[in-house]
Length: 68
Image 1 (tube, rainbow, N blue to C red):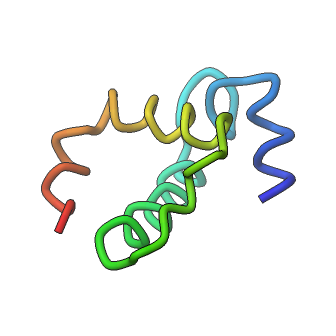
Image 2: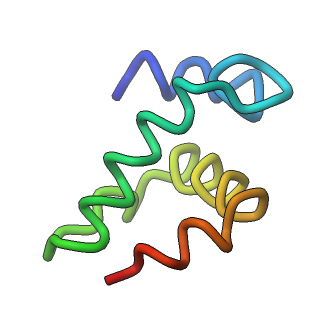
């Protein structure tokens, strides 16, 4: 996750000011883990959690449908 953390130091999304397909791919992995898993991979990851939160703000209705 280090390359993603480095990118998110300087910009809100992986591609800059707007989310790209890459954001959705990575966010999908975290969403899947949240729905099926016992481990919160975003816990303690300030930059990643803030990034995921920005995606939830934009696409929250879609993400909410997969909360499990």
